Structures are given as structure tokens and as C-alpha cells.
Image 1 (spheres, rainbow, N blue to C red):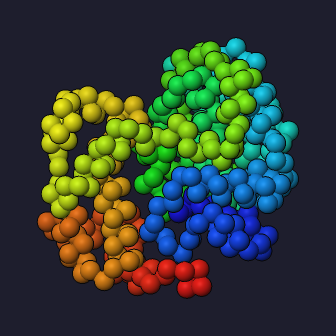
Image 2 (cartoon, rainbow, N blue to C red; image 1 turned 60 degrees about the horizontal axis):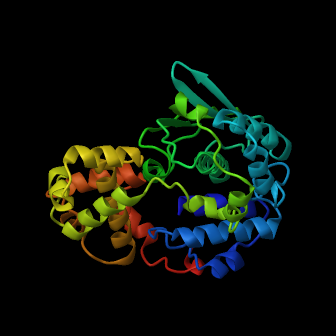
Length: 342
């Protein structure tokens, strides 16, 4: 939900009611514990772009007119390798998105994709619109890069220029397990740095005009569903963990059920940008938030159903997830099932 509210921040800054777009795409932002199906998220993404004639969601000093993403893709097609494609992308974005500067640098076997503010995007460095602007542009460039070379590109680490947001636990699935946060000084500008293996910059561009025409169907919102980190092994492990609750399965238990070695599962999860512990923690978090918001089950029962033998351990985990105790979260969000309730 954090990605949805961030996407809508430009509307809020312009005092535009988002409800018609939310209703049309079947999204209820009052239900903070719910996951948004990726298809609805992509539909809202495209509908918002069309409504504003701005593929930058109204977050920047000048609109990024509809069609910009198509020409961003076209500017990269003729490049021989990914390094040149990203260089072209940076030059194109300088024209249509002057608030942010995109560059690539290479040193000591590592490549760094750098997204820097040319001027501050918001007075508050943790403004949801500013947070989303960095999240969005990184996903856009990462997804485009993966498509251009015809394979997933694993991000080794990302440093985000703001404090850890409430939805940071999802960063392991979307970006990388090694997601760090370096807050920007109020009034200053910040820089995002995404690191990956430098050899990947030498991958050849494998797409052509015919492939682009197919790729653009449903774009740019569709790119949110491409090269996501929560791929096959993550889903299989998450499903097994959910089905076993309140029993807590170990990595060895999962390996036995999938007829694979623990080492193979560890490697596959790592390739998909996740980890066994990260999946287990995210699953518990999602279920806990939903149960506290939608049921009157005692907190001790929720903790036990999630496999916590000690309720105090659940309390500590919950505070780490949300910044508040379970009872305070329930008091804030229980019964909020419609926009009119807040």
C-alpha cells in the first residue's frame, strides 16, 4: 500500500480527489493491511498517467508527458551494450525529467546506477511523493535494463536517500535484501546508489523494434510486473510456510518438501533477491497486519498462530515492522474498511 499512496502523492499536492481512479481500478487505500494485486497497481499507474498526461505522476516541476516512456525505450534500442543504453537513458531523462540526474559509474568490479536530485523534490526528505519518485525511477530503469538484455539483473545493494519507510520490508522482494537508508539532511538534496556486478554493463542489447511493440502494450504500468523479485521459488517457499502455520518450518523442512537441497533453495532465493528469513518475516508481517485490522482475535492468539511461542517476541517484531505496538495499530486501523472512515 505504501507504493500506492506514494503514487498518489502528486494528486494530493494538487488537491485532486483520487477516488474516481481508485474506484475504477478496484483499490481501497483505507484497507492498509491488504496487498494490492499487481494488475490493479499497473492499471492505476496507467490511469493516473493518462489522467494527468504525466508519466511522472505530478511529482516533478514539469510533467513527463505521456509517450515519454516509449521514446525512452526507443532511445536505448540501438545501443550495442547495456552501459551505452543506460547512458542514453540518462541523457533522455535529462530532457524530460530535469529534476533527477541519472548516471552510471564503474569501479573495482562493481557498477553503480546513480539517481541524484538536481534540486530537492520536497521540503520533507521523507515526503511520500519524494520516496516514491526514487522507488519508481529505480524500478523503471531496472525493469527496462532487464528487458533490454533479456535476463534478470540482480541488484547487490541499494542506498536510498531517506529514512526507512513503513513498507521497507517489501524492498527485499522488489529491489534487494541489502536495501539501506541514508536520510537526506532537511533542505538538502539526496542521491540513490544501486550497485550490481560491473560485468552486466557489457551485456548486449537483445531487443528490436518488433519486440518493443509487444513490450509497449500496457506500458509503462506493465513494467511493474516484469522482472519482479518475488518469482517462482519465493512464491513456493512462502506458500509452504503459510500452509504450515502455526508450525514453523525450517529451511531443511522446505528443502525436503521440494525435493531440493537447502543449498539449492538458498541459491535460488538469492538469485531472486530474497532469503528464507526475509520471506518468513514478510509473511508473518502481512498476516499480522491483516488479522489485527480485520478481526478481534486476541493478540496472544495472533502471535501463537504465527508460530511465536513467546508473545513478547511478537511484540518486538511488530514494533520493528510498524513502529508501534500491536494494540496501538489495532486501535488505529481496525474497522477502517471504507474511504469515508479514513
